[in-house]
Length: 211
Length: 286
Image (cartoon, rainbow over all chains, first blue to last red; front, side):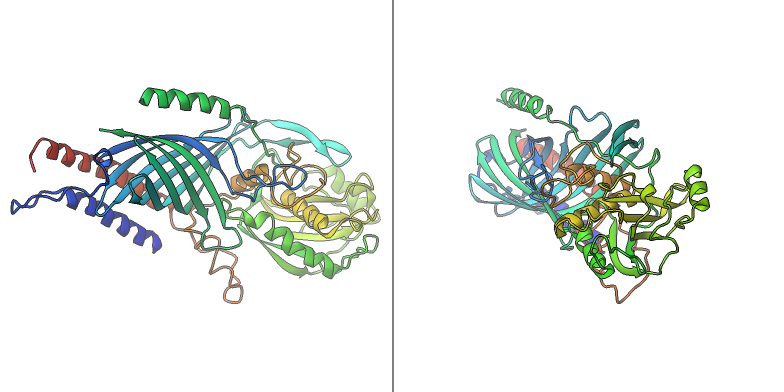
């Protein structure tokens, strides 16, 4: 049911975007999209950054230290579509790249995202939206002898391709510096389930390319 | 400007890509996992853990934190383990031989031995066991073997704590919880990890608080989340309410592709339509 609501909401946004740019049949002047500056009227967004999965919930050493920052490289592409009153519709696709030496199990994460953004100031944007997160792991197969109790045993690497899908609720803040922006983006997994709720975040450097 | 941006980012990515990769493993040479993503974890009602100075009730109390601090915290996995209290007492569980269903030598030895063979179980059952052959040393804390399969799917797994020594009983409560969680990792199909930050590392470490990245990736692979809706459908506001339903089959999650297709649908055609109109406006057609 919620999926349907999301689809209706998205369709509404889509219609809103198109309705704003349609000429009126009466010949009245169409309303230009509200934007804080001319440069943000219509942009492609190219970005790169880092992604940290499950902030402060992944152990990284034997002393119990948790992962607060990860250098997982992430690239993305998006669009900036002005709506009314300093609001923007911001769909995008992001890809957390697999690690170079991941020979056994290659892990890719893709984000299919849509944000509603507002610019309270010309240089600052707040984003709220949702993502479908596609986690894909491709096992290369093989085996390895590892310690097991007082001896060693053979353990195996998978030889399948499997995917996991999640919906996340997202919040972000962005500093807009001419054609470049710096962005902090959070993704809340299992937002309605306290036991498994986790927050991931990304830091992005974006380039706004004006068409 | 754009080229500078690209070059800068490519250089940065080259640096980032040098990060070391992690690699989790499987118990078997096939992807064995429980068929159902709702698995109960029991303590055998007749188990005896005298050497480890722990009562069955205390053992039961260790299970819930072992599940909720570790395996149930992964939103990208739909596996939900439940501490289900005591199971019916299983014959020979306190001193019998524990064998993999494919290890015929072990099974024949077990059947022929005075202690006998521990029979196959359903779900996950934890007990103490004093048969030294199962452990291969007094410093081995516990052993886990999925001992009931249906095809490539695990039906049941048995975790036995070493009663030949009192090492387990001498651990702190948090270490006992971590040991139980590690063994549950084997029960659900995972093998060891080379990384000492991972729960599935072969030995205890100074401080174990959460899963490592390997563990998270492994359980997400074995039990992938097939489209939760912000934690609602799969993880279960409904399923948490155990008094309503005892049905182990979770409600089917909505297909995530719908949302994905919507985003793609919006992303491509909306942008083109919008772009076309902007261009028209630029040419004075408005």
